[in-house]
Amino acid sequence: MSTSLFPDGSRQAITPLAAQLKLSIVVPVYNEVESIPRLIEAIASTLQLHHLNYEIICVDDGSTDGSGDLLRQIARDRTDLKAVLLRRNYGQTAAMAAGFNHAQGQVMITLDGDLQNDPADIPRLLEKLDEGYDLVSGWRMQRQDAALTRLLPSKIANWLIAKVTGVNIHDYGCSLKAYRSELVMDMNLYGELHRFLPALAFIEGARIAEIPVRHHARKFGKSKYGLGRTFRVVMDLFTIFFMKKFLTRPMHVFGLFGLLAMLLGVVVGVYLTFLKLTMGEDIGNRPLLILAVVLFLTGIQLLSFGLLAELSMRTYHESQNRPIYRVREVIGSESDS
Ligand code: UDP
Ligand code: MG
View 1 (tube, helix red, strand yellow):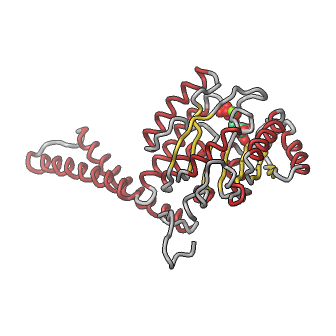
View 2 (view 1 turned 90 degrees about the vertical axis):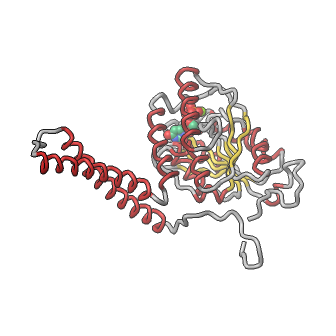
C-alpha cells in the first residue's frame, strides 16, 4: 500500500479522501444510553461535512441500561451504523477488538461512547495520519476529569509507560486515535491492552504521532473505572515490557542471568570445598553454603525458564503464522502490492 492517504497529493481539504478511502469509527459502549444518539449524530455530521466515506461501528459491551436495544433500533434506520452486540460485558479492550474485526475501512478511528472525545477532531487526526504516520494519538491537554483520582495517577502512569516502552507520547489513556487498518490487524489485544496500543504498534514498527484534542466533562452516565485501574495498568506494563524486550529472544536474557547465577554458585561451592578439603574446616552450618546452593538452583531454573520461553515464543509466532518482521512497503516489478 502506498503511504499517502491522498495519492493525488491534494490535501487542502479532507474531501479527496471520500473517493478513495473508507473510515471506520469504532466506539465501545457500556451503559451510555443517553450519549449514544448524540454521539452518532455528532460523528455523522462532522464526517458528512467533510464528504468522508465512513461507517460507524458501535460495540455494545453487554450494557444493562438498554444501550444495546437502542443501538439495534438506530442501526435499522441508518445505513452508516453497524451495531455489534456482545453477549456480556468483556471490557473496553475486547469491545474495541470486536469493533476492529467488524470494520472494513482502511483507516480506523477509535473514540469513547460517552461524548468526552470530540468527533470534530477526526479530520485533524486524518491530516496528521496523511503526513505518513501509521498511528495518530489524541492528547487531552485540558482533560476534564477529577484531579486527584484520575489526573494524578494518569500523569504518573503516562510517564512510566513512556519510559518503559520508549514511545514518548503524553496521553496513553486518550481513546481518540487514528490507525491505518493493517496496523490494527497486526496487533492482538488481550486484557486491558487497548491503552498500550501505541506501544504495541511501536513494537510492530509503526510511525506514531500525537496531536492535542478537545476533551469534555462527562455529561451522562458515569465512568467505568476507578483507582483500581492503576494496578491493572502496572501489570499490563510488565507484559508490554516483556513483549518489547524478549519477544523473539527470551533465552538471551534468561540464559544470561541463569548462567551468571550458576557460575557464582559454582565459585562459592568450589571455595567451600577447598576450605573443607585442605583446611578441614566445618562448612555444614555456613550461610555461604546456602547461598551457593540457592544460586546454583536459581541458575538452573532461569535457564530452563528461558528454554520454555523460547518454546512458547515459537508457538506464539508459528501458531498464528506471525512473521517476526513487518514489511512497510515493497517497491519494484516483482512486488504484488
Ligand atoms: N467501556 C466498555 N466496556 C467496559 C468499560 C468501558 O465498552 O467494560 C467503554 C465506555 O462505554 C466508554 C469507554 O469504554 O465508551 C471509556 O470508558 P469511560 O468513559 O468509563 O472511561 P474514562 O473516560 O472514565 O477513562
Ligand atoms: Mg470517558
